[in-house]
Amino acid sequence: MNVNSTDRVLVVEDEPSTRLGLTELVRTWGYATESAADGEEALRRVTDFRPSIIISDLVMPRMGGLELLRALKDEGGDLTIVILTAQGTVETAVEAIKEGAYDYLTKPVEPQRLRILLDKIVERQDKIREVKVLRRQLREQGTFGRMIGTSQQMRRVYHTIEQAAPTAASVLIWGESGTGKELAAQILHQLSPRAQLPFVPINCAAIPETLLESEIFGHEKGAFTGAIDRREGCFELADRGTLFLDEIAEMTPATQVKLLRVLQERRFRRLGGRNEQSVDVRVIAATNVNPAEAVKSGKLREDLYYRLNVFAIELPPLRSRKEDLPLLIQSFLTEFNSRNGKVVSAVDAAAMRVLEQYNWPGNVRELRNVIERAVILSSGDFIEAKHLPPLVTESPDVAKPTLSLTPGTTVEEAERQLILMTLEHTRDNKTRAAEILGISLKTLHNKLNRLRGRIPGKRQEEESVPQ
Image 1 (tube, one colour):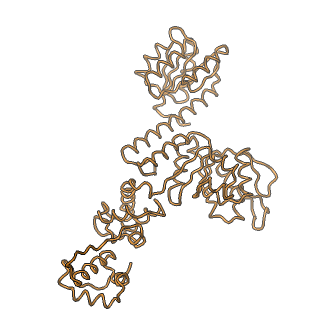
Image 2 (cartoon, rainbow, N blue to C red):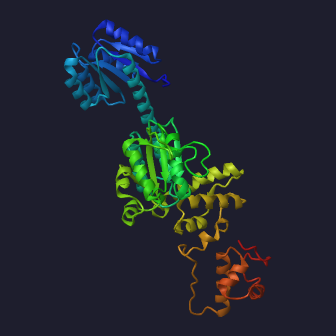
Image 3 (cartoon, rainbow, N blue to C red):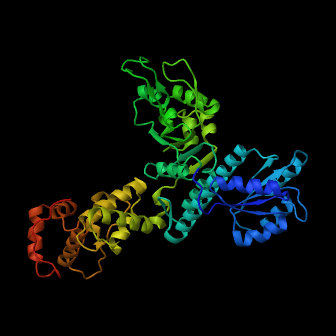
């Protein structure tokens, strides 16, 4: 464990030799240390020394460890307190934990146990600091790590991630394709105590059924035709880290049974192997179907569902959180400007209306692809509707322009307005406009020639290339 210069430890102990010994011992591990003879002196030291960890004896004159704990709790702050107790006061030490102490150690203190405990505390405090950074990032920029959005649906997702990340519990993420399930899994891993260890993703739908079990559990040489060498599976590769199983409902029932056994017993056997191996792996699973419905249809075993569903995270589709569109678009503009040497600053009003009306069946992934294409096509400061793909602009979801006529309008004027509106809708793609109007391309050109001079700001142009 790398000790940070901000990791300060205050040792509170009334017995001088023990106080000195603990202070020097902790200092040799790289911590900045100070000491106090009782709780009252400790309260004064806290103000100027500003420790992140306090190691305090439970029984001391004037103010003991429990009273110190309560006083510090009233003042607030992020202090982590470890209580030292003699054998006869263990029950009081347990009470101190209920009051908010992190843990207790019995005296005489075993140096190795104390060091392990301090390492765990530092790791925990690092994660707490990371979460605080993400919360500040959310307030200031509307992002949570690489996840983007400030809608209520996304705030609920962030809250569940914060709760689940520090634990070893399994997590089941579900949402439509393109909503960011692997991204959520990565943030869970990054905020967990396993962050420095492997994150191993596997897409169960992308691997042939006959090979999936080998990919997950590994195989011995000769286990099946083509197994020319022993191979480690995902569980071995992810040992002490996180295994992300995407599209879990695509796994065969037989493989689901084996996965359930590994989750319950933390042991597995390679294909063709005789010896079982122990693993310490946190499993995060994901599916693009409602897991409860997958259980009903038989795609997902009920016992596996309950084993994985300790924490459930439902990622909302983009169409249900369109208030997040401006933040997402701006983030993608920044990314693709940098990548392509562009200076596109925003999406113009007309194009934004199209993007807001579209239902985004491919969710954030589809939006990202659309903005990347638009940035590449744009030659100015703004993305316009003509830079958006026909799939978006011509979608039934997107409101089409309407023609409003009043009594007295001539047939020639009505035709002129209809042609202009259709050309605007097709972004001057005359071939497509002719198809919509139900006339030939030659007829459309003839009509445009007759209307020439009556169309403000228009000039006769060559036919646009269909997009």
